[in-house]
Length: 141
Image 1: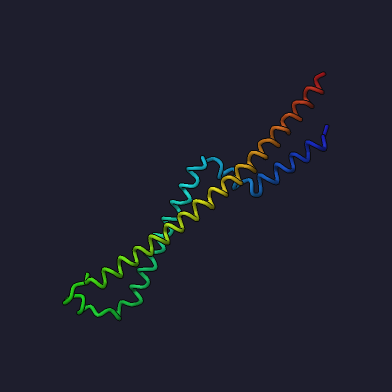
Image 2: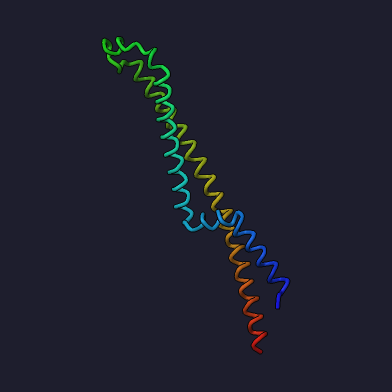
């Protein structure tokens, strides 16, 4: 026999599994620390790749304006150019640190929210199983 309470729980579980639950269940397969590390690693890799692409595009844009004869006579690493390179590297490292901190905080919050939803899902699933057992016991007696 169909129970209205059981049907409501099944609908709620199926809605969760096909919606945000798919992401939540995939996310909570990892431990919190591992999930945060993966997200931070993705951010670092993305920033490195984007920086390389941007530097390459800037170099290609300015390649015809570079006075190559000056670099041959003076050498590329003059004091002023080294200061620019070090300043750019320090700025990039600061931006990388900010991005890593923001990603870490955001991914910890996302994991905690997902964990709460998955715990509610598992509790609802346990209640549904209990309803099935109660019905089965009622049918046998």
